[in-house]
Amino acid sequence: MGVLPGGFGPERTPYDAIGGDTEVRALVDAFYDHVQSDSPHVRGMHPEDDTTSRQKLYEFLSGWLGGPPLYIERHGHPRLRMRHAPFPIDGKAVEEWLMCMSAAMDDRGIEGELRAFLDERFSHVAHFMKNTG
Image 1 (cartoon, helix red, strand yellow):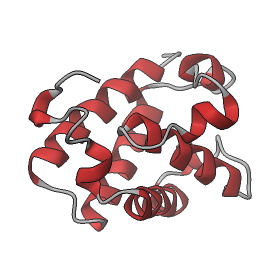
Image 2 (cartoon, one colour):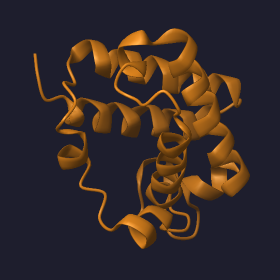
Image 3 (cartoon, one colour):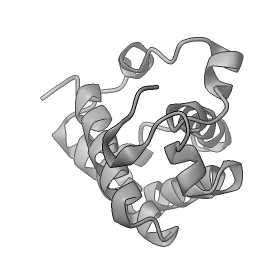
Image 4 (spheres, rainbow, N blue to C red):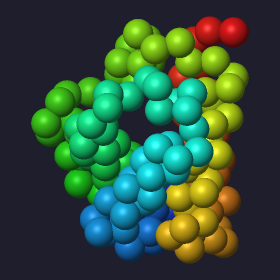
């Protein structure tokens, strides 16, 4: 990891800035709580019991934010587009996903340069996942 916007890099990771493992898991739980209550479109793409979905997003974000590469260790390369290909991800899904993640970051008090960095990165990935419409 080279130096990223916001001054993040190997010596100062977004994972550390967010608060490490406990806060990554809390962000994921807040995100899925918002998916449950605020996003019927995205909710419909997940199984009724979203425990596995929560765990996989937590594992992915851990490594993606510069912490332990849990997802890669347990499941291999994320291959995000391939893994999401069975789901019709349109502009509405992208916007609802981003709305839920934004609300989760609000809930967790993520602000300042970390928030700006994450807003940009999440937006980039969410739009990259769009595969229809």
